[in-house]
Length: 140
Image 1 (cartoon, helix red, strand yellow):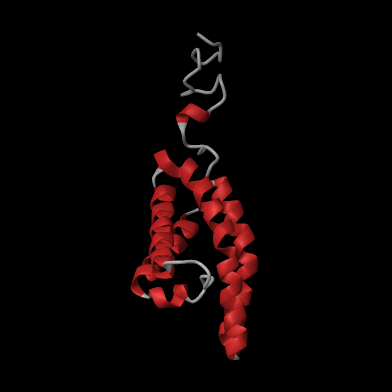
Image 2: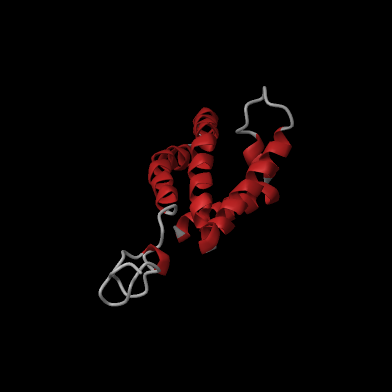
């Protein structure tokens, strides 16, 4: 999950530092392509920050998975453009990252699961559970 947050943070920052790289992946029929690049960069940074904060991790996990699904066509476009330009290295890199979307989506969805370290997610009867009636595990 931390790797996914780092990827989002770096990529989101690059949307602002090098918007032209991302603008080329947005379909030409969409208006305000530069604005869409900035908006998607802000969403990526927001997802990164949301994944890093335990209180916002669950909604950020769902938002991150959704974002990865939405941006997949742009990643396909980037691979297509690299191939069309004849850059073998860029083609290999952009094609190679496409199958990585699935484990990234899975990681984002796992971030929605409660942490084992969260005392409110323990089973009744475990010490520290909010429903624990003491060591016997009886509900109060």
